[in-house]
Image (cartoon, rainbow, N blue to C red; front, side):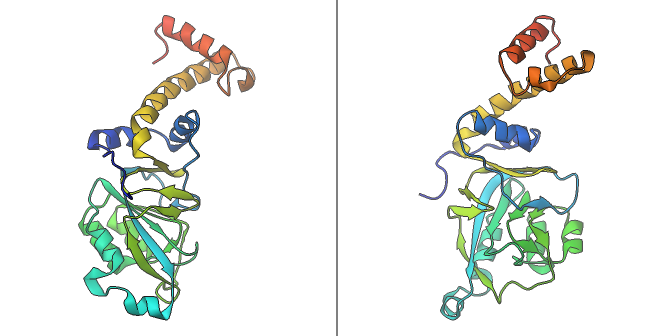
Length: 241
């Protein structure tokens, strides 16, 4: 089975979009899940915020027989993947190397037409000016002038892939902000949202206390018994929201 059996709702995506990616990492970490930060996927412009269900696309190294066997035209894997994307989906593409291009303006015009939630890759993208003008969220290792087809070919759609050093399953939540991209497994979304909401309140309390009484953050951070005692005191005074 490739896709998650649990479907993330649009309401859950809206909640995830408001949570900073470091807090999502914390929510997974306290449940003993491995970190799911996609290494190398950086925003091509500042101020991006993104949350969507993963549609995956896997590139493979170029080989003459693979090129011969690869479906052509609209049946090529990338175009099949594009048609699965909409405002609440994020296309996650695994490249064969960080500097290799997964596409540029003409291909990604279709993603703009479909008002896609975002594009994430551990490879690079071409025509960054055009992509920025298209307006959808793009996270990549870098931008490049290189062509991709001489080095790799799109091959697999909606498979479990490895992107930026982590596993991405179709249907996972893919969340991005200025710090990068984090994948939240569908089975963990509710728990991560719950933990994130609590951690945001606790961190607000800790920062408020440090502002009133300047001292080493080590007294309260990482969270410890002193932290929770402080949090309960603020809650009792109605100051923990």
